[in-house]
Amino acid sequence: MPETRLDVLCIGNAIVDVIANATDDFLSTEGLVKGSMRLVDAEEAERLYSHMGPAHQVSGGSAGNTAAGVAALGGRAGFIGQVAPDQLGEFYRHDLTATGVEFITAASDVGEPTARSMILVTPDGHRTMNTFLGAAQHLPSKALDEEQIRASAILYLEGYLWDPETPRYAMVRAIEVAREAERKVAFTLSDTFCVDRHRDGFNELLDGGRIDILFANQAEVEALAGIPHLESAVAAIAPKVGTLVVTRSEDGALAVRGNERADVPAEPIKELVDTTGAGDLFAAGFLFGQARGKSLEESLRLGAICAAEVIQHYGARPEADLRALAGELTA
Image (cartoon, rainbow, N blue to C red):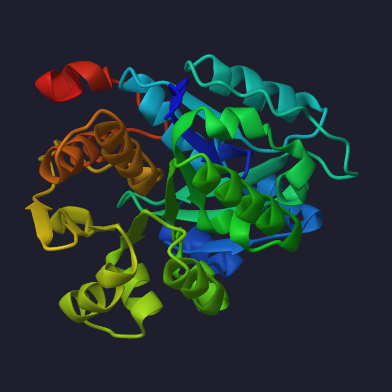
């Protein structure tokens, strides 16, 4: 097999996160469900933005966060996603490449601005996301650099991008290219709303043997299996995929590969500030571990360390030195 240039190549929505504190009363007034993610149009995005308190911006998007996490661990990470040729698009590219991520997908004028997500963080650390997908949801197959895919040990795809039709075709093509090159394909279910809308499509991917590593949280794997019980859902889904990884917030995480299973506890934290990006950074740690030949348990521990770091501050990008936190696990 040819040498790899990248450990992990992530495909997802290129979204600028606009993060602000909010009270439970503010959410109620706005009719928002705490902890949820909803899609909004440009008009609603502008309206909500005008009502929010002081905010700070960071380049986000689930797969982009994962790519940044892999790079922070010392891994070779790449990202494929679409921004518009506007100020936010330039901000996104600079912010992501500054973390060491290879982002060579050209900006494209599709008549919509760069995507943004208004993230409201309540005092208990929960985030309520209001996402305007803008240019991100129009990522076409022709935007893929297929050589970049072939040169990556693991291709990682976010379920959020499966929702619009155009990028779904791009993801299917990327999977084909990766599989032809005998690379691993990882997929995250992203959100229960993605599972509810695309259960058949996701199961088709799994049943077709096209996914090597599947990431889900407890609610997502139960939704995919249609079984409201963790162990039963794991038993139903694990045989369909090479490796199943299930995160369980403060209850840790588990991974199943064939007859092998590993469980790890959550890493201790001083204070929960903002859960944005916890799953994304968990995936970064696990994928880095797998790309470097680590065991299931070591990869889970890397994931837990990365997730614990990111939930102790605002935003979905690591601020502390992940390599130092992970110590020998990154060797």
